[in-house]
Image (cartoon, rainbow, N blue to C red; front, side):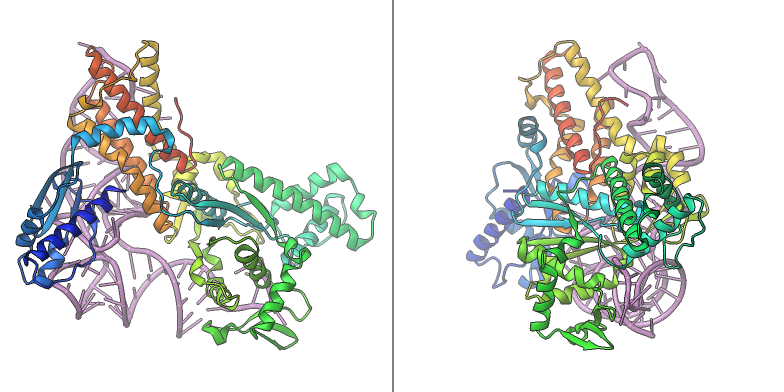
Length: 552
RNA sequence: GCCCCUGUAGCUCAGGGGAUAGAGCGCCGGCCUCCGAAGCCGGAUGCGAGGGUUCAAGUCCCUCCAGGGGCGCCA
């Protein structure tokens, strides 16, 4: 049981006991929250329960605090419980407990910090960029967010499944095929024009050249439609290969690359459409098939099947979500989309109802757009319009770890400017390196210890009683709370902040406490502490999908 | 016009209704005879505006202002 929960229970019992003695009037117990005080002198945990009880009982908050404390049975690892103005109860954990955690961390290794929040099957779908061009920084942001969330949810006990939805069907593909074929013809010296709604980016020229190198004029030798289809297929394969490589460099892995086409091949698309029809959620008008979402609270109806008979992206997304929840039985699904898909959210929620599913089980995280710039100049990232700076180029310039850290440091809700000029300039004194430097420093100390053949297995952790040592331990044990927070709120941006704070207290400890010194007992105890710090720091970095370097 | 997100230090951003609002960068000043100075220690400036709810509001509600995004038989 977490400390927090234990303290809440303790307070609840104290309240009940006091009430039985007639000391709390007829007040009912309000919700007990246990906070982390902002200041160290306020202890490790605090509750504002007396303030909440003040009006209910008509008593003074400080009197309530005193009364509750008198009726509390002090939990084993708590050293001190004190009332504090204007009406708090502060708890300080014992040094013995803190010392013991060093041994616990060393024993549990990178499993330290795990919590048991749930065990459900959770699917996280993210990135899912069209296979019609390279990923841009916006995708990178979603990728980092999704993969970090996956790591954290696993640490919280969930069965996590990561997935990339490959849009290998639909009208965008046709535009891509046409554009590529045109570039291919141009590469072979023929006149050709890119369709107006096509892809004009330079990468299409490179792609066409690459295909010419391998296949020569093969696709001109076949009937036009077949040539376009064949070259399109190869183009998609090449682009998907690039995307997979980009994500690998960024440290992002998927359990599955789910093909949109497979929904049609397997019959699940038709099955889902039939369900909607049977549920009377469908209307035929203007030659098209509509989902009547406006009758269920959405702003408007949405087209499922166009008048030319082709299904919309929305229609296959319905089938896809049916597949996630019903065919594959995920308990919860998290979709991470860019802000440009925001209009899609409300209709997907309506879809959940129409399919007889609980909308609460589908969480859609909208991550706001990334504006890429070099100094004052804004760099366009639209695939269709032309010039783009890909995620790959950004990673080449600033490094994958730095990319991850920067993307993670901002909540999904806030837009971000990614200034390449600044990112490169600051790369030397970036918070990323501050955190990694702490890890490298630790590795260096442990290396020195190994060279001196120091065996600190039996180090006596009870010797760790100075403020810098205890502050470090306090910070280390917080990791489980951070994991809990991130797993609950689905906001991974807490991790980089925690990482920095942990690095700070370590650097400060290092400055004040000589580790390898003449006192053999103290040396062993501190080596153990340093080892524990390394474990927690590495774990934090790994949760963020970053490397924990031994030297840099 | 309607919907979503954002407005906190010079800049980039944190802040689960609680105690004196924090961090990084930048700026100023100290610290290497000693385990990595990519480090440590110290210093200045701030919640867009106005109402409301609450014992308590940067945090919740309303209005307004400003910026971004969305409102296709695109995805």
